[in-house]
Amino acid sequence: MDEIQKGLLEAVADLHEVPQGAYNFRVNGQLDGRNTTENIDIVTKTDKPGIDIIIKAGTKNESVHIPVVLSQSGLKESVYNDFIIGEDCDITIVAGCGIHNSGDQTSEHSGIHSFFVGKNSRVKYIEKHYGAGDGNGERIMNPTTHVELGEGAYLEMDTVQIKGIDSTARKTTAKLDDKATLVIKEKIMTHGSQNATTDFTVDLNGAGSSANVISRSVAKDKSTQTFYSKINGNNECYGHTECDAIIMDGASVRAIPEITANHVEASLVHEAAIGKIAGEQLIKLMTLGLTEQEAEAQIIDGFMK
Image 1 (cartoon, helix red, strand yellow):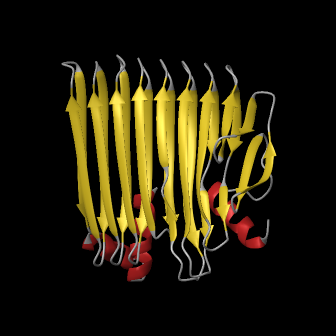
Image 2: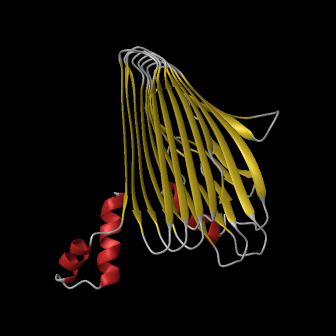
């Protein structure tokens, strides 16, 4: 990797060097490094671009890194990654994509991820998106995620769009079996004329299943954001969806939560709040010696944590 690519890798996966355990690096549409372990195998698909990540039952305290880096202007790709996770696992998956575009052509990455999580397994999934480069070409990311959680399975997804992505359409669907739990924590920041849309659909099919979908976002300048969230309670279950957004300048934010109870024992809650930074917060920090811009940055940093 060159220095630009290494910088992108650090931004999206917090990697300064080759990680321990299993990993797969994809750079400008090509494999750039791979390692498997006794319990985690990574296999290149033969029918379409992408990989299968196969994790043996009983795997504990292991991780797999699968970052993607694009530094070639005009490159557009769709990548299909399937995670097949056996029963009684406890693992961490670190993904993410960074695009550096210094040209005039659009660079685009669409990652289609499918998770099949076995009975009583626990998975922590971390995904960061980041864009950079001083060219006029757009940086576009359209991630699609499909989740199937077996009985008693737990999946926590932390997804972050750091900055620099001109357009993103994020779509997530999930189906939960008995006593399965899904936790989604989304953080997005847009500026300029950027646009971000997120769309969640969760089917709580199993008895005792639960989902908690939380989105926090900041929209600056003339950027636009739309948040869709739909939770279907199809059994005795608990579902909660929440969207909190800070709006600034001439930005626009829409929040459209939907909850549907198809069972008498389904307990579902939705919350949505959009507002500007409170003036008293700014004044309080400015009395401590911060400029208005510094105070604003502090408030936003605290909100996005």
